[in-house]
Length: 131
Length: 76
Image 1 (cartoon, helix red, strand yellow):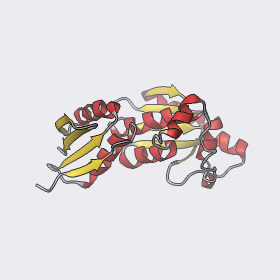
Image 2 (tube, rainbow over the protein chains, first blue to last red):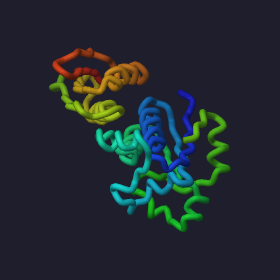
Image 3 (cartoon, each protein chain N blue to C red):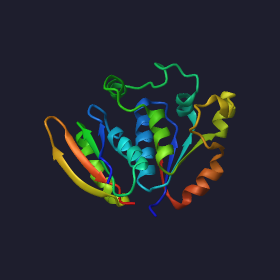
């Protein structure tokens, strides 16, 4: 089996969210298990109630992604989850800081809240990247 | 063998065409073919890579008028 991919997603930048979604979904459908740990500003992009226009903020590439109607990042994570082996975790600390419940995150994506200890420990047997 | 499933993914950016192909393959039987039309050069390279990695069968890649046609047979 391919080495699992562990993605630590902290950035709220559209470009990094998009890249994380692409890596996670393509990895997951390519028989490479993926786990994504969402924290910091990235958490904000997964708010259930985020306004359509405000969900993704970024620079030059973000503008192009929107203009050219590239696949939506949150939807892409969903496809990775539906079609492949992918788990997504909400950082417990980030939820606490925001005062959010898991129910305030987009439906159908997250497998639960997790702490760093578990994620880091699981990631010892795989490849770890940060976005 | 049933009729080939056709997906028009022209205008969709990577990894859209690949994801649409995979979703379609889930719905067909082993031995059935799925044809994806794509204008995205990256996808036209990536789809055969994926097919090889997960061990389906690449039937062919042909360049049509303004797009590519990639045909995959479900092998497992």
